[in-house]
Image (cartoon, rainbow, N blue to C red; front, side, top):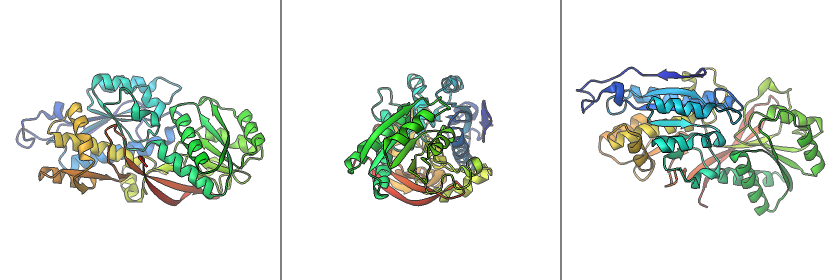
Length: 404
């Protein structure tokens, strides 16, 4: 994992006038990627696979000859969380350094803290993990894309899973931000449509560390399942529920992508046994070994594939447009993601572009076909269940169209 502050990879120029095809100055013309991803804060557990995904993509791009004859580079910055101004300061730093694309943030609310800055500067932003429906219609969203799907689909799959498990009455605990309330609304709407009853939605302060009041509300609600839409606050919230005799074995517990993690000995053995959860993204098995080569200490791979795909798509858009420029990248991102010869990874797709082919990039995170709003128009949602060792196993995947 990258350390806090700025970390740069592959900043050495490559190529010369003969191999760059147009006399490019690789010190200034190379593709420069910036990241604003969590190194600290409540989503820091998601940082390692996301950084690894970006770094793997940069490595592959450069091994394949770079973009238009020049090496790509990356500058890593911390996103923190909504309790600090770190992300906005990181955006300022990347703007000063002239990045062409920013990968991030992980949190939807954190992205909203700097999306306008990037829009004003005309810099492409691709989030590997934002799922709030708010981005689909965001006013200053012209330069914004995401390789994770809107929570409209995750809400549908999670609600269906709860119904299929036989639950009829749920209560939702959600953090107070655009991600938490947006996903809560999606779950509630779909659960009601499927014939269930949503007794209440409790929205809590994401900076909270004590949850006895919320746990008491769950215990008094009469619900037979609870949906936990949290980030790392779950490490305090879950024990509070158990103290009210509302453990994962007493009550159906359902997690989401913001807290679905392999907790291991962070909780007592058996603590999460039987709890279920969902997160967007296809099976990561195809990329796990490659990510482990970048970061051998990875234990979670959530949003690693999406981070790789976001970085590769930016490079392919520049390659197709024939110029390393943020405006060119924006104008070509949709085109390289759909309606062409299907290809995987940077090397294969770059070779097709060199042969004059129109490409349709197929990512490790699933088929990525950007809509005019920068959303992926279809996606895969995985359903997982915790075992006695507090790690989760896959129960299957559901592929859906967000326009259904």
